[in-house]
Length: 251
Ligand code: BTN
Image 1: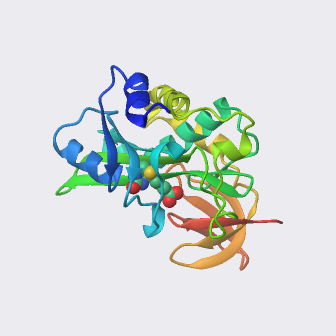
Image 2: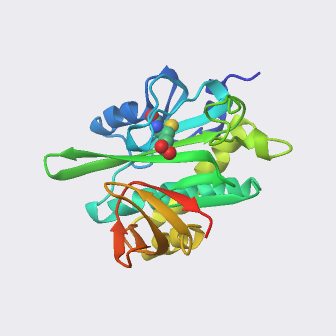
């Protein structure tokens, strides 16, 4: 089997990237490279992460070629920052759409599910020099094959190999994803990005349970241009959810 390093070399030739066979987290390596003047769009990619992290302080596991684990370094204006999670959601959603994954769901803010099980996650971190934004790091994890049948995650996680008759290999998934990154990166900071993300979001109109600083249920009515979710809570109040998790409920 071709090692991940060779597949990455083949698919990312001509780009600014750093590959690590094993690393704690691509987010930290990307942060170091950003401080060392990485170019916009540079990619840090790992075979295995030993301390991969997810949103809301969760862990993120991946090993070898069973999942993509990468971070994209973005040098951008503070005005465009709120669109980085949208960029992540769009890149992954369009990658999976291109690979003909059935039953795709983009759940606010940027979880990508197949049915009710998560196939990919997006994590955004920022870097500052005092009050000056120096950049953002867009982390993407995408499950390609195997390892999602253990009892603790069988209900919640899924991989490409579980949903496609012939799962594409690691190299093909990587080049599809960087192709979508090339498509969407120029739109960062424009209304086009917001509308594209909003158009793919499956959460609007559904009953949701919000788990953020407050926990409540209601109907997701809309989003704001900054990416917040507007939920009509059961007490009739329209509440703005800036961060957190939502669970989709059947109406
Ligand atoms: C989520 O909680 O849904 C986000 C998961 C993000 C995981 C990716 S894997 C590559 C990058 N490095 C990390 O440590 N996390 C992100």
